[in-house]
Amino acid sequence: MAGFEVGIIATIFFGGLAGWLAGKFMDMRFGIFMNIVIGIVGAAIAAAIFRTFGVFVEGNWFGYLITSFVGASILLFIAKLVRR
Image 1 (spheres, one colour):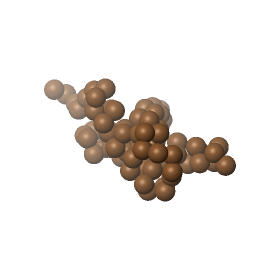
Image 2 (tube, one colour):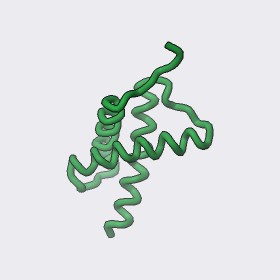
Image 3 (cartoon, helix red, strand yellow):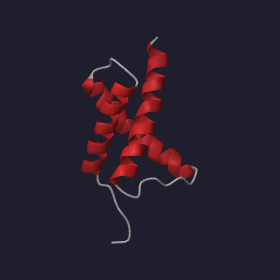
Image 4 (cartoon, one colour):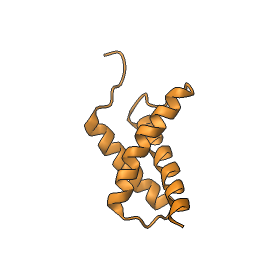
């Protein structure tokens, strides 16, 4: 096995966990379900952005969690701006 591949179940799990953590960190009141959805979407977007710029932090589960957390935090910040 050459590298660490994250499957769809792990993406949902880490994205959901990161969305929940980002919601707590940013004190957002969207509800746990919406924070999890934002975390999953944020994980995909952050991974694509990081790959575009050549930043690879997805070497293991902790790196993927960091990527997901950054993406979820960015999306929650944007959602907070739009919600106002």
